[in-house]
Image (tube, rainbow over all chains, first blue to last red; front, side):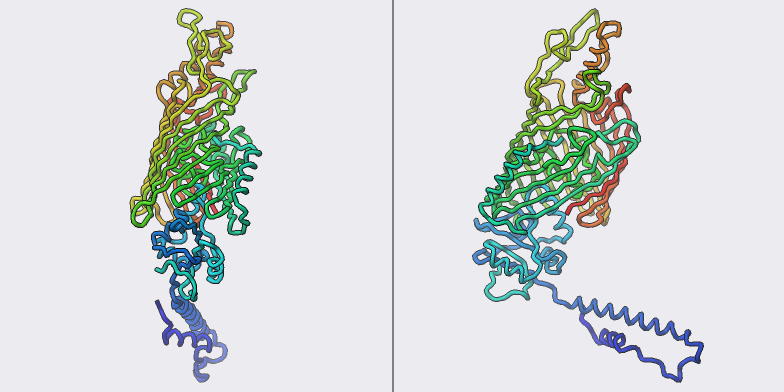
Length: 180
Length: 438
């Protein structure tokens, strides 16, 4: 994981405040200014590239989501193998109690991390799996919930519900049934 | 072949599904929609038609299909599924129909038991359940030699599945499917010359009723799928006409005579049965070998018990795939054949047995030929090379070149009127199709 360093900030300052101009005395005579243009263009291009790199570095510095499964009160704890069976439709109950699971939003970092940690799959494989399973008449993929707030609200309101949120969205009173 | 469901039966089924909702109010999360489709073009190098639609002028009918599926969650253990499919009609070569391919209510009381009642698909082949959804496999067309063996795959009935999770991680699953059901479907026959003016030449469609009962054992794990199954099919004509067991030979002079193909002709009488039985056995598997390599193969034996004149075939194929990024090229070899006894009957009936100077010989010979053409026969194999290209996780583009070699003859080829039966001939087929599922 990269973190912004002094060089990144120096380059950002370069872009935002402008590159130092050459001294007036050093300017070429009128009519020959086109000679200097490539230098300025190059400076700006370099600055833009470094700004993009800085943005990438800042983005990469965002913490990796920690997918935590929360459940309606009374749902027992589950291991990773059981999570995989629940989210692939091969299990629909825990200890005789019907359960229903929900996914994080498609394409989100949380969902990608969840699939990698618990199911050892990526989004493409997971979708391909459910495309087959749905069309052989063995159920539909878990519903997708857009936010942690929506997931928490759904889990609390739905008996047997299990949902996935980031560990940073945990709050007291939630029934955590699985952690990585 | 595809069965159709009468509207009142379908409505009854859906009403039952609604009743099973147990008063649970439907929400957006309870009902989900999906769809799939294949837009496929196929063209051959021959004037005559192959696999019902493929000829040198090309067309979309052979492989194009569209479907939409609604899945309704009725409660923790109950659900209902309806899949409508638009595809070329089973009752006409020039029409398209929209039919319910799936229409069932499912009850899953525990992790291990699943009961489905309604329109379901029998697990005759390795890819039976998903064979209409081209997005789920890489071949441009599942090998017709094998996937045309059974009289029908869609039935109205009950289907029970018992599953066992295997291994410590539970990613291996063994399942046993048992089902019983029936279908009113249509069988297509091709008569080269017909029997003018009674029967026109060309395609003929006969309504049949098929009862299917079967068991399938399937092992699924991340790198391997294995399935074996056994099925019993009972088939009768819906118009009540009996089916011939064999045709007695009626001599009319030294060394000449005819086969009595109808009780309206003079002769000792045609032995018949009201219903014929077939036993269908299948064995199939798909294994991931590592390094992007994958192999799939199936064998199906369709054995006829009650007549010498109906479908009695063996089919098999093997296909090798190699995934390379978004491309998955493949090579497949398939074969379909019928026993020598069936070909003997075909030769006896289609070769004129009466000399032309005998009054009525032309009509008798034509009637015999039609009877011979009603036997489901095939002697052919195919080699196909193609590739799929994953445009996205839900869309695939596929292309294929296939060479089919027709031996003595094949019911998958329509012999044009007046021509000799197509035999000892190769047919090249080029196919390209776009597949999607969402």
